[in-house]
Image 1 (tube, one colour):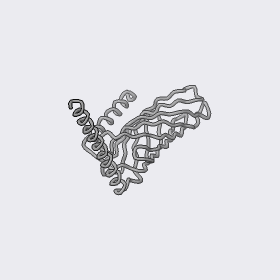
Image 2: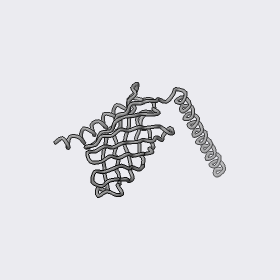
Image 3: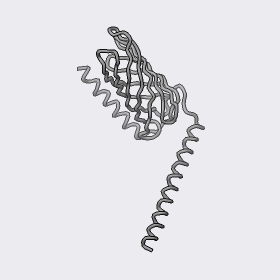
Image 4: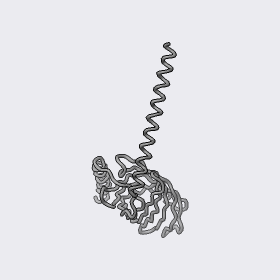
Length: 193
């Protein structure tokens, strides 16, 4: 009964995060440290923003019979505002298994995250399929929920610079569209001339 309720609870948590995020905008973060919880597994995670939409995450994954260390670069896409993102990435893991000894392989990750406004907390839910090269259980498909504490925030100057960059990008796009419309009008005049 408990195993059936856990996926429903995760779904409800994800739904609540989506609904709340439509009404909130939040600051981005630089570095965050936290815990990951999943089906019979526990882990510690460290996230570091590298570029505005790229981050790297180091994950330790502990189970009763194995230990894994994973490194994943991830790409973030904002959904609503700056604080609510979907992300996906790929990386590698290494570790040890009670029965098989050393294990290693490849990982994919996809999920959502929400930086809570006015609090140094990031909530995330993800799925991290893993392919193990030297293990009889060669494929793993765990889902996890994580909570991270933000250690470093993005500075106001950096946010201002990013806003200015987005504004300039928008202005350039508008100028390109205007030139395109002018060329089309000129071409229509020549044809109808």
